[in-house]
Length: 296
Image (cartoon, one colour):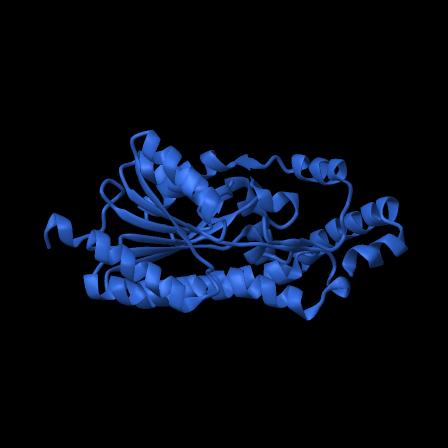
């Protein structure tokens, strides 16, 4: 096997990043470009993705932007095909696009489930289905799926997000076993609290069903000390280079994962306490009539 016939880490690598216009996706794209990769920032926010790509190029990196709805498989497959046609290879695909619906399930509409599953699960499936055959033919490649710490333990108030992220963890670990024999690597990122737009209400295309005052939400997240996205990206790429299977960052969030694995009953106990705190905040700041209005 020659140098050109194996995965590059990360100099001269070719990487597609979905959700690349903001948050973790943007930080991953910038970090990869600094390490010498050619990055493709794919996002529904096409204008913002192009701004990020232009900034990377202005700094001496190599980046392009692409408009992409990850729920659209033909479009995802077309982007992969175009990228391989241009560069002759695909080293990495970061299936990172995501959104959330914040609020109790009693306020859901069926469209809320559809929205979360279409992006957070179907988007990952589409990215895998488009890129995996290419990587099998090459004999190398690395699929990196973004799940969440919420994919490792029960997380009330984001139940649809939690369900989708559990599925992404299962998809990634199972595919990792199949792909290894063909020389293709699979990892799953499980971020804890990272300072991204999703903390502020589900992301650009997410939804808030119980809109607590901004200062209350900010105080809630500040208690868990969100990690800056650029620091997250740097640590994530180190773990990807080390070919780790399940990547939990910040590392302190592993405590909740391990606790839930050791004693699911204890994990449920602590999550019940967290949910009770949420309900108290809603009772204090959202009269029941306002909750119903926010939900519908």
